[in-house]
Length: 241
Image 1 (cartoon, one colour):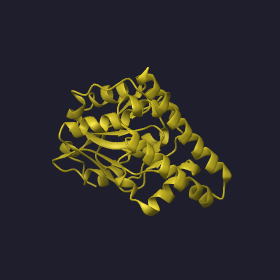
Image 2 (image 1 turned 90 degrees about the vertical axis):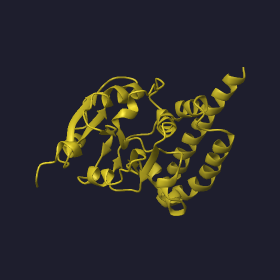
Image 3 (image 1 turned 180 degrees about the vertical axis):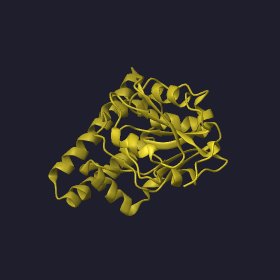
Image 4 (image 1 turned 45 degrees about the horizontal axis):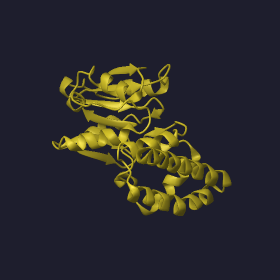
C-alpha cells in the first residue's frame, strides 16, 4: 500500500485515566492514514479533549475514548463522510454491557439509532481541529457531549452520526445522577425531552429485559433512568430556590 499523503492524515486524541488501552492504540497505529496519537491524562475530560485536540497538527482530528475498540477501516469509512458543512462525524457503537446493548437493540428495531438527537456518540468521532480553538467547555467529566454538539452547530457546522461500522464500547455505566444534573444545568433536556425519555424507558425497558431473558436487565436500566431523573429534578429544584 502506498504511503498516506500528509493532507489525508488524521491525528488521534485518546483520553485515559491511567495507562492507555494497548489494544486500541495498536488498532489506531495499524489504520491507514492515522497520524500521531495524543494520549492525555488531564482532568476533567472536557478540558482534556480540547487541549489535546489543539496539540494535533491535522485539519481533522479523531477523538476516541479509551474504552473503545475500532475496526481497521474505521478511519477510512468516517473520513468518506466529510463534507464542507460538516463539523463532526461520529458512529453508532455496540455496547459490551449486555443490558445497555439489549436496550439499544430494541430501540433500534423501531428507530434508526444514528438519527437520535440525544446521543452525539462523542466516544468515537472526528472533528475539525479549528472548532476547538474558541471552544470554552464547562469543566465536566459527564454530560459535556451535548454541550459540545450544540457549540459545533452554533458555529454553522452540522454534526453527523453514521450507522454502526464496527466500533465497540467496552465501558461500564456512567454516573447518571451527574448526567441528569448536567443535562438540566446546560439546557440539554427540557420537560418535553425528559417526558420523552421517561416514556421510551417505560416502553422499551421491559422488552430489553425479555430480549436478555433477565430481570437484572430490567432493574439495571430502571436504576439508570431513576438516577437520571433524580439528577435532573435535583438541579431544577436548585434553580427554583
